[in-house]
Amino acid sequence: MKRTLLIGLVVIMSLTMIASAAKYDLTMGTGGVAGTYFPFGGAIAGVINASNPDINMNAVSSGASVANLNGIKNGDFDLAIVQNDTTFFMYNGTEGSNFAGAAFKGISTVCNLYPEAVHVIVRYDSAIKSIADLKGKKVSVGASGSGTEVNARQLFELYGMDYKKDCQPEYLDFATSAAKFKDGGLDAFFVTGGIPTAAITETAITHKIRILGIEDAKIKQLQAKYPFFAGVTVPAKAYGANQPDATKTVAIMAVMVVSNELPENVVYAITKTLFEKKADITKGHAKGASIDLETAIDGLGAPLHPGAVKYYKEVGIIK
Image (spheres, rainbow, N blue to C red):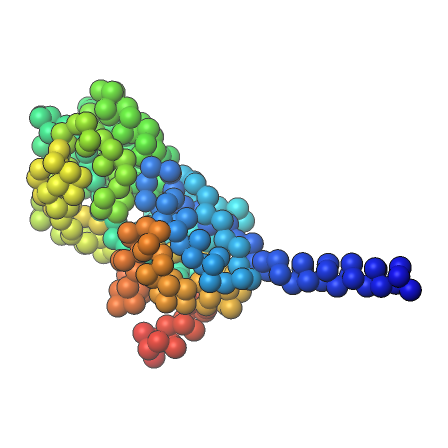
């Protein structure tokens, strides 16, 4: 009798442990530790886990947008934070992109998260006044396979150059770019990220910097080819006193993308949490304040996941 009771208790405890365990273990690709994606992704994952007992989401550092999309394709990631332009290129297999001729339709969008400005950082007293002046210079174009590298290529092309031929490119993440720039090993470095981005903030603590501007005519020329770009101004002192000048540049959107294999109920829960727990996410990272239903589905690079559509219909964003 005691043995039967003991076995019964063990079975009940085992079933209870199984029931209490997270049903969905999800891995989210983010970016380098000195960028915005990684800490912001961590804040999002923490709130989603706290709000949804059936979800256990882990935000991991990665090579950012291109690497994240390939990670979803390869099954390494279930979801990721990526740039809307890079999403568009993968979904459509756009010629001239990292995904030329290799369209992948296995991704869907959840929502826009926040705008990302394309920063090109030089020393304040540098003779480099324009992207055109980067010819022959030592330039970090971002980590290989990152959205920053994609944007660097687009801007060099805008000024009639190929960065692989017309400058001395290095493929470094934000933190490594900043460190090498401060040590004098780079003339400039690219960062596509939110305003502010940690690597630039840290650079400006010890070095007076300038962000290269893009002329209005050039912005219009870029938008004619890539309509997902928007003009944006990086305010003076966004990076402290050592960045005294405001600069007009371009921006894309950071978006959340998921694998089509994720069930509708899971993506619905993620979408609902992003908007209804926005205040909690913002406590973990300031970029949470940019999550906005009014702009949630503008200019997306891939279709919405059915789970996201369900939520947007509930709140009246989609009729």
